[in-house]
Length: 526
Image 1 (cartoon, helix red, strand yellow):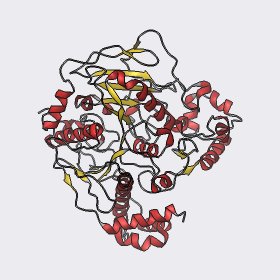
Image 2: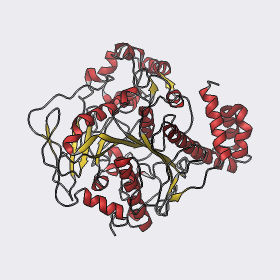
Image 3: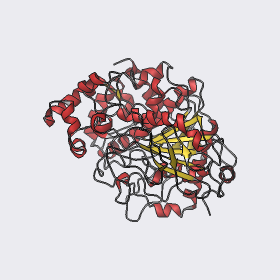
Image 4: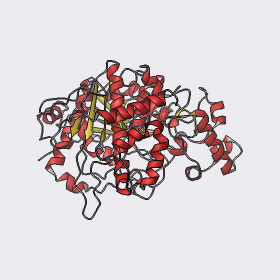
């Protein structure tokens, strides 16, 4: 059984994409020079390691991305570029920096293109992936994000690298003062914007349609995408957005950090480091910066994000894009254990204030066992509410909106604690790459998944939904279970994505009303 044999839609799309030996001509002319990719495989040609911005090294550390220096000869695009500087993994494997993978350096602003096009005039939908990893790790070269299977279904797929940790999200008053736009901190977001601008200028050469670009991403990538939907700098760079387990407030609800707060943290970090100037910081070796400075994450910087994104969405001033968004049934199961009852009650009472009694009616925590269950359920429900809110805002604006709820339990590895449909568990299914190492060590067994008919079925289904949405703004297609559009926060239905996919029953209105009330309090500044 092949991945594309389970649904008629998958088979038809593979044929439409040119699954025979035909492929786009090589080399491809870009605005900065020509690139030559590898040999086509089943009609998909891959171009790796294409620079989309100048190396952000030396004096360009902590500056907005600059244009690429043009080249004269044909540039080989057969190897991935270096990944951005990042830690090896905090107590676990970081699949972006495996021993047999690319090197790691500050010179990392590269992207990769998978294209099934037979000519530059094919005008196929374009899907640009922005990886997750808490803004501290990840790379477009990760095998899990290989775009071959999505390309076989008729999309031009792009993965990219963006600066991470203290290189991508470090703010300081001196950096703000020297910047053209009077801001600092969101260099990683600027890298994403630069890659999307590159797509606008160059993707037609790979048979992609620059007027039909979808950004998709998971966790931190999903959060960044939601923020870009509200950014005036991103207006017109993409037509559709897919956010998987994350939106502008994170994986739940909270206020965004502003530039002043991020700058204060930067000043304290520099003082602890003993540096006296930005010039000294720029002269430090990359590994020392990585070890001794911290990134602030996305901030309201006054440029990419001029104001709190919640206010932009609440007032309907965000960019006009279709969305497909959702979360997972066991989002927080990767957390070890859970809080004790007293600790949980104290934390939630402080957070919910006058709403605390309503919260504990929905999430009782009389014992440690109840508190652990309530903590996991509240994390799951808060994330799901946030994704529904995102879709609701876009639907109110007149855009297409679709919500999913991923509920498939990947096959567990022997003697491992299964985490079910945990955070990031959906990613292998989206790319139809379920035999690859997962993003996080979630207790699943990729080899078992690759032999499992239900998991193969769901991977083919989800990858078809994603490509269909990128093509038309509607995930539905021949042979796929019908996915209802999402129109209202309270009444809209999510599509439950498991082997036997189906629309959900309506969610608990009391829980939705509870999160609505907390959000209204947040918007009012209380």
